[in-house]
Amino acid sequence: MKLVIATRNAHKLEEIHAIFDFQGLEVLSAFDFPEIPEVVEDADTFEGNAIKKAVEIAKATGCWSLADDSGLEVEALGGAPGVYSARYAGEPCSYEANNEKLLAELADKKDRSARFRTVIALSDPGGSAQTVSGECPGVIIDKQRGDHGFGYDPLFVPDGFSETFAELDPSVKNRISHRANALRKAHSEWAGLLQSL
Image (cartoon, rainbow, N blue to C red; front, side, top):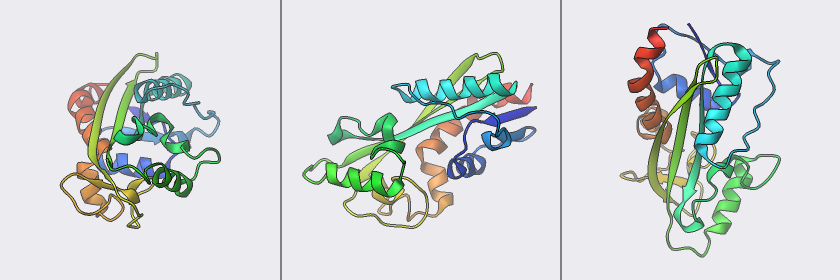
């Protein structure tokens, strides 16, 4: 059976492959379907965006599709950047600009608590979707550290660690991250379904 991962983000694709056991599945991604336009992520929740991506890609390819929407929610900013995490500093999207804006917004804030959150949606070719979610709590530090990861990883220290996501070995991050937690739930809930198709 073919399963399409609804992303053209190479970093995200790499993380999903590292965490999820796709045994028995032919795994493709949006890279394999260049004729399909980008899905416009205009929902106001992670759930809405994940479902929209999974459903649109499933219908366009005629295959089951797995999609996620993830972001950083900062307590002192009322949950921002949230669904706008990728384009927090505006277009064109830039990890560096997003991190600089986040640090500026938190400059006078004492509460630095935050969490990364992921919602994963699975859709059949007819557009029927289901979701699971995962999160990873932590804090935002005041200076970027580390060379691994992407996005806000150099600023985020997960609870129980002293290193940022960008300093941790990828194998450690892939064990504790929001995406890892969501993918474990997805595997637990959907493995039987996917293997029976």
